[in-house]
Length: 292
Image (tube, rainbow, N blue to C red):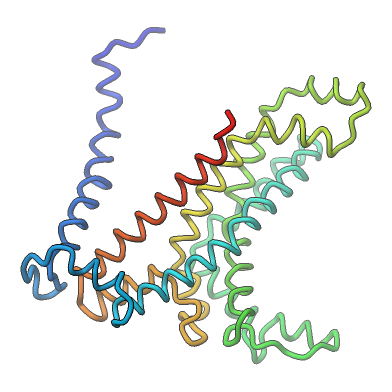
């Protein structure tokens, strides 16, 4: 069926309007604010050029100290979370894909249902699980003869608690996309590989992974972006502690805007954070497809 140019524009226009209203204009407005001395209650205090960027990037002042602390903590979380989020979800997808079709729908629902839970509920559950005094995990450890661990007030246990909560909460989304990609793999290739005597690992290496590589790269990029946006879990489970070691860059920006009433510096931090994310994601994409 051929669609006329008028219909094409009509169907595309709502998405274009939403893209401009909710992405382009806020980005340009944030860039404008970042070049001004701006407070939430006092409004625009005048053009300052790149002073806000200089303040957060030049070491030795409170703005740069806060920015680099939040950036370091965020990068730590990105480094420890992306691989488990992708690999574990792929493993679950392969496991679910291997069971009979009639049972797949139930396991898809079981694993995906956690993704529908709000971050507030997830954080409340895992804060109770990992509470040092009387928490469920420590009770289990004590029953098994181990001593209690101060999960939420000592490193690296605080990161472990946040990581487990994040994996449990978000892994269903990645798993569903992997399952859909696995459903699209040509089954005749597996049959041919079986006739040639290929084992499971060779089938995965030469058939499965090349067929789902696009989804794998996409989910890796999405996981990096999601991990950069770490906020709710650290705010509600550890409150940024112990000693600000889990205070993410989003938390720093939120405090800069609403606690210190400095919208200009907060916007500059958000713009720099966005640029760092673009560089990392573009590098990922380039190295993933450089041989194709």
